[in-house]
Length: 253
Ligand SMILES: C[S@@+](CC[C@H](N)C(=O)[O-])C[C@H]1O[C@@H](n2cnc3c(N)ncnc32)[C@H](O)[C@@H]1O
Image (cartoon, rainbow, N blue to C red; front, side):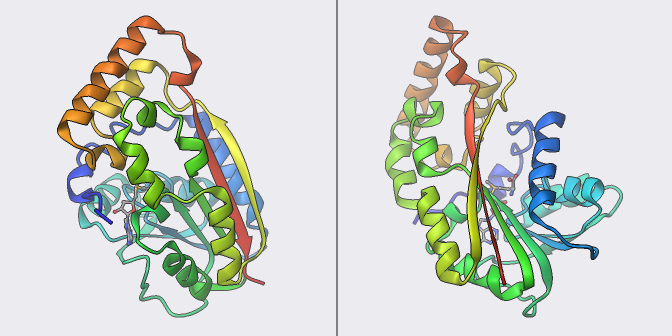
């Protein structure tokens, strides 16, 4: 599988992925509701990127957070944002972690699994590094929910690439169960991450979703042209503002 180059993406990642206070609050609640423990939680944010989730999990939920990613450039951005030094930052390959067995109470990941050839390698590692009673949480756009979004409709070359790398919700749940997780369940959220169609278009121009870095230049330019035309014709189409995000969780019993 051709891999997205996060060494480059690191420069624009945060510019093109706005996360409002309201959405952040929703995600913090969803995460904390699924981690029921009286002890001080040690959480691993795997594929943490620029720390979009690691930093709020540490400062809002009070967890002891390790943010791990295999891109030095993404982790550098995260470190810079973490002015209070709340998070332990680490360079790690999610398919082969250096942490001992039973090191964490929770593993969270957001938009990670489609970046590796065999997602079960990651989920097996999560099972290994979790303590008994630990929780796994995966936040992602499932294939069935991203296929019709603007980034796939306007840039159709993305569909074949994502069909080959992006699991469906059912596939994620199966991978969890096969790795040994129990009480596997999923919740789908309809979100409105973009305040206007222009902000989403700007994100596409910056190749905010990694699949746009993998298509041909001509497909990218055609897609942008069609995206711009559509906004001019239907500026109030709500579809331009929405995304569906899934959270699949499970327990190591
Ligand atoms: C789409 S970004 C998500 C970043 C962050 N979780 C978020 O939601 O903002 C995917 C991240 O996964 C990281 N990544 C890709 N393959 C990885 C691997 N094998 N091990 C660790 N991190 C990986 C990339 O470097 C990138 O930072």
